[in-house]
Length: 170
Ligand SMILES: [Zn+2]
Image (tube, rainbow, N blue to C red; front, side, top):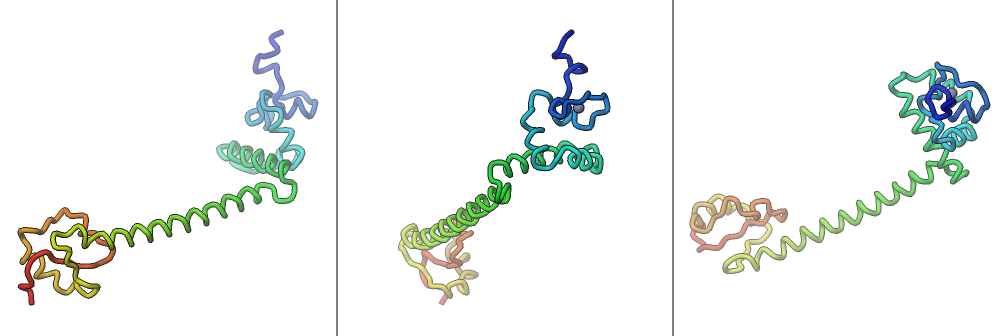
């Protein structure tokens, strides 16, 4: 009668294997009749009996993930018979490495620009060298009028201390 009703239409696996889809069919939940290619791929690469064995071995809550993984791997293997999904993984890994290098280079540029900009943003452009950190304790006291606790320079990645007042810490 109603050929589209759930109980009457066999799952993609049983349809493909030309057998009756029983109520306890292990494939029915994961291979709906609307996705015939999904089972065809998995069957071609892994074999229906292996897939059935595998689904019976894993916990019911893991079966959907297992089927999705098998379907992905099968499709990748059909597209790329030599490397399969490993081909896609290595392409993505190379991309990650390239982007990581790009990010490192950009971060290094950022640090460089931040360090170079500090003298231009101070009032007299004075900057103490790399060893200037030792004077920072007296710096806060002597520069109370100029000291901004929320200043972004507190996080200065260069580690440079600088002062804008007189040298009364000497
Ligand atoms: Zn079935």
